[in-house]
Every structure is written in structure tokens, then in C-alpha cells.
Length: 109
Image (tube, rainbow, N blue to C red; front, side, top):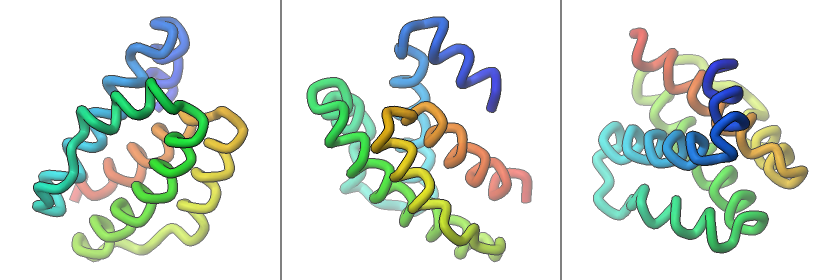
């Protein structure tokens, strides 16, 4: 996670956009939802950063919780709220790291 955050800063956010796309693609495949379009998320993130970042954090938190529930993992109470609050303060890269960590636990099963 630390490497991802550092890469996002070093690449001036470009890696963060790739990370956003990657998380969206993982959720799309895990939840088998064709209505999730990670490329559109990246575009809207660039165009409407502060507002869309907050919306994305809230929406994605629910999907991460669903993936964890389906995998039989314990839920992380408050993860969605924490991630959304971090996005409100411009720390979306930390939100990406939190969601990636939650999804990595699923992949490790």
C-alpha cells in the first residue's frame, strides 16, 4: 500500500488514476456487474475531482463490503465513512490504499 501511495505522488497522480481503474475492474469482475465502467470513473474523477472523489469513495465502499461479505470475511465497520471523509479532505490516494487492502484480503483467501 505504501508503494502505491508513493507512486501516486511521484507520478503526480497518474498512478492513482491507474489504481482507481484497477480497483474498479476488480470490483466489476468480483461482483459480475456490467454496469460498472472503470474508464468512466477515471474520466469523471479527472473532470470533477472533488465531488466525484467523494461519491466514488461512498459508492465503492459499499461494493468492497459486498465483495468481503461474499468471501465470508469480517466486515470493516466504518471503512466507507472513513474513506469518504478522507476523500472530502483531498486524501483520495489513502482511500485507494484502504480499499486495496480490503480487497487484498479477499484475494488472499
